[in-house]
Length: 129
Image (tube, rainbow, N blue to C red; front, top):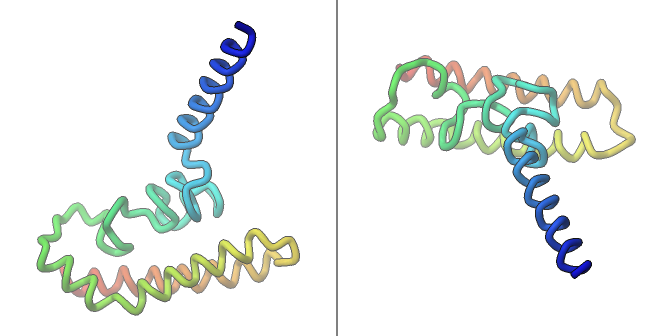
């Protein structure tokens, strides 16, 4: 009986912990769903580090304008290299962040590079509207 009660409490605790973590964004990639790793709301907040929700890229969201599939495909095709560079910089940031020898200045430099790429993606989206 004791084992059943302990097992039940353990399962409930794990489920509650997972639910809390999922809802608050803890542990879901760089910046989580709420932007926790790099500061809440970093670079647009929302889902992921750069905001924009699922399936969108920086520059495509937040305009209030709907993009049709053809426009999205054109944007994705024309920004493939920039998006790849953004992905690599995010990875670099995550690796630097977890390294205790990384200085704040080094993290700031990577963040600036990410911001610059983000601005390029925003500019590209503006041109395509």
